[in-house]
Length: 110
Image (tube, rainbow, N blue to C red; front, side, top):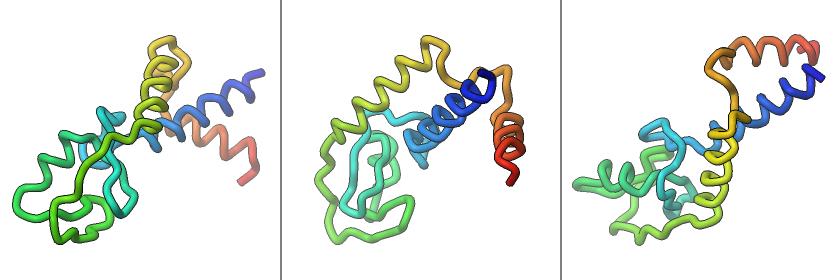
């Protein structure tokens, strides 16, 4: 039973990392996708685009400012994740992420 809970927490931890903006390091708020395929919070991306337009993650340079469209699928996933987190299903602050990872790796014999 404890192993299943650990797996569930690791899955949520992995999902949380996938739903994190690499600019603000928080879960996405109004996520947008740019032509290279990376996702960012709308406001975070606009704040980084002053004089030139490049991807903050892979540094792909765009000749003109790309049109930003909300990634509705990602937005729905973020909203669902935040809903689960508020119900206490996400990793609790009382258990450090590193400790959970060490236990997980130990269980798998890696």
